[in-house]
Length: 318
Image (tube, rainbow, N blue to C red):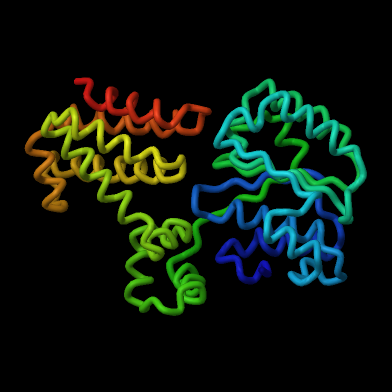
């Protein structure tokens, strides 16, 4: 991948490219942006640059780049904030101890702290110690929905790269290269549905969202019918993995919002209108907040089997 392949964000790409050309990449970077804007893609690109052994970095061909692409490079460590324990104080202490050891085989060591807005303050304070006196040949990359979720002291010692959703034309051009078998009409429809968000459009084009969308509608239908056993069965289906459960939660919020619009007299889908006839607008608003809370719970180290039962009980409450 080249930065030119990254959709939109022209100013950010220019700033990053200049830093790479001048070998002045900072020791700590914060990549902020909404889900689907490419935070993890950009973090992976920077990590590949840092471990590449060629002159024109990242070359995509050397052993370092190939290992980075496969996720097996010994000098790239990823801590994922979707499970809080992965960026705990103990985890940060291990990173602090490890980062002073020389790289195994690359010019640099890279630590990616993904979804670090879920990193609690004690862990951030522990991390701050290494940011204040960073070792040589180490790059820390943090990804977050908003840099404001991090301590000001952490932000002040890092460079913040903000990712924005590209305009529809740029998004369509990017997706056409990635999905040459899709028609311009299909791509345009998915881009518009996702508001230009490439991540969301990709999910739609890959068909991954359809199952989640249908399950979300079935769950709301079961709530409207007070079908307790069916609701328990459906919420259990969410729990195959955390990513799928998160997609279903997103679809639940989207469909509940559509039902609220239907209750307010706004023309929406027949399915939303049918639910709006059975559930009051007050109940729908409560359901929306319950789903939003449930999605936050998913980012903790909750047992997924327990989550399904708990979520079912939460949706049944009136």
